[in-house]
Image: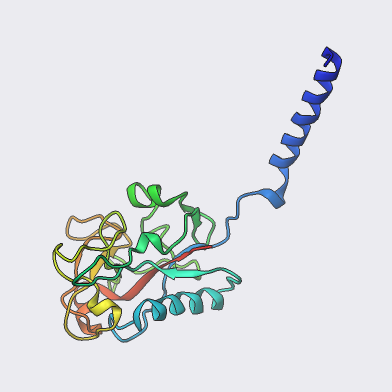
Length: 218
């Protein structure tokens, strides 16, 4: 290949690269892929299992205008004889943006190590801030049932933290996160402390309302 021919090929390749970079149709999808639910399901931690929780995420997302996305609640499960389903394995690979287009995390590693999750960015499906520490009522406790890395607890680790795999509104406990990254010196968004019970009253007693994190898994 001659020098002139090489120059032409190089120029064409550079032009294609610039066109692809400038094309809005090929830009990253920054539509909403994450939100905190604006409301819980109203029956404490009885969500109807993972399917019921996923349905709640889907219903709220679609009411807010999000179409054709697969929504999953960020929840883990627990079993006495085997490891349950891990929240991080349910929510896709990212990236995830909030309702106002702010990047929450580019992938699962960033989500569980250094996510852009604070009260200002942990918005509900309508792009509104969720009540947190200092608000009345405080509703910063978010149901997760998960360890800090997003995995489910092993049978021998600290007991059951999923309120009967999200079917109990009475006895039991659920692991909670703080969406505003404040409260009691614990800044974890997904593993702040356990609940005092599984009823709506028990969840409210520590600053919760049975709210969930929802992620687009597609």
